[in-house]
Length: 449
Image 1 (cartoon, rainbow, N blue to C red):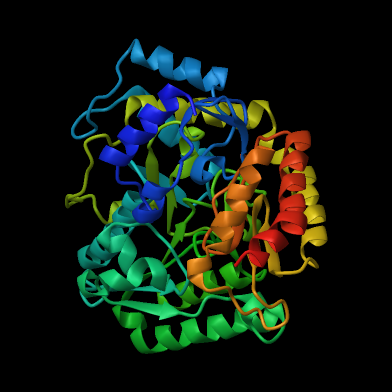
Image 2 (cartoon, rainbow, N blue to C red; image 1 turned 90 degrees about the horizontal axis):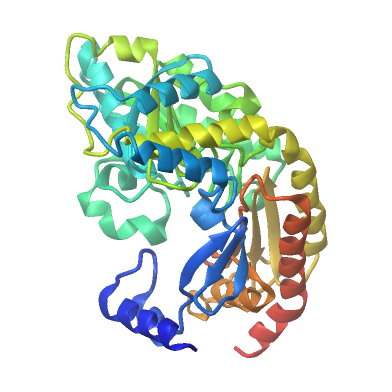
């Protein structure tokens, strides 16, 4: 370890508190310090290069140090880096709003900016609630969400969260939400169609009882990402949309993780031709460069606020640098035909997952677009999990670092979500590392328990 790396690690351990990290383990370990990047590689202070296999927490799109985005941000700095949208306009936020309306489902016509996925969800909740208050439907104050869902870490978004590990501690702080079982095909004893119908029946039962008190159903379309890449059966999203229309409640689509190409379409809702009433975007919106989020709504919802004020706002709402980066990213989507390039990459991942699925200790592989997971289990037949304290997923991902891959698991689910613009050869190299590690390193890790 060189002196610079050692000093940085010492200072990190002295001053920093890392998110979603068991700090006792962190303080005992020798962490990786990333100090540069190039293309689809992260580079640490020792000069080691790692394929960015989780797109820097699911947000990087075109790689790192992309000239077009770099230049857009630099040019914007020469004009203005930030000015408030409270009572003022700003060119880049206007231009980006126009482009977001152009590429999202046609019913979405208005854009409200914030700075993270959680705040986009908070805004959606408050809009849905106030929409019905403005209409005089005062009883509609509740929300329906899916078990195993994740919508952020603020109090409102946690109230919608259905992951016990993340959310149970905070239940006394939260508002009541009606939870419906997620369609979990690999945990359901039946066909995908039966699995979807089971969840839809449960949702309809809740709506029959509480529909007149419900403002909105909130869900991640197609894939529940932080829940372990739970891929919903085809038609489930369409079924939810049908139920929300039948019972007069809004549909809020949380596309924070699924948006910007990750499912194979620009937005997951487009795969089933569903137009939600509210859509939340973040993560990939700036190509993974800067914090920015957007909550899009219909003209009907917006019009219900014309004679009243929506009391919500953030200091950096519509930040000019973030919007400039987002505009440059959207231009790259079109120029480089990113969406059109995805089928070959999706098929390549499917090919490697087919090789991984039969291996010992692999309970399941699942994939939607370039969002994938390999679930590691103690017993392949019963799907019994390893005790959490064994941290198999974490150990397996760490074993891939010397091979040049940077991944982060969700418990014992190995998550793959590479940047959607990654080239096919580099994606194959990443998949080869994952396959080799599960074949050869995982049995050794388990053997040492």
